[in-house]
Length: 120
Image (cartoon, rainbow, N blue to C red; front, side):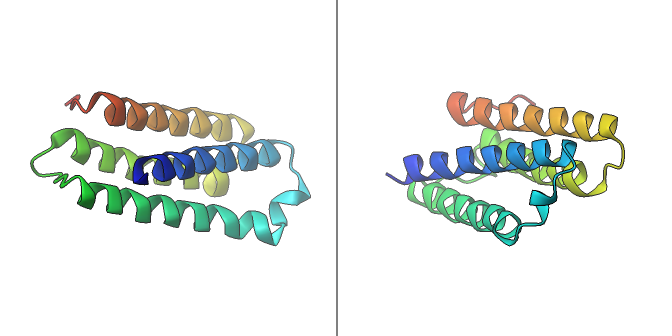
């Protein structure tokens, strides 16, 4: 059950990020909506809470399970590149590049979660 909840929040996180990216490219005023500023933080917090609960339930230790350590680093990179894309990138080209990089981290996270095989 925890796994499905965690996966649902992961999907919501990526969908919200993508929606905000599209609004950013459109230079939409909707980006200023209060719920659109708050909801991603709630979703990402719940994603983290259920991820921790799942790791505890399955006794996954990043020191012993290198794929999990890589996944945690990829999550950190997802957060950093997502922040860069939405807040720091000033040109449309850099925003698009940031979005592609962020989605690359998402693909790595999914790959690691499915295969449970460290890449590095």
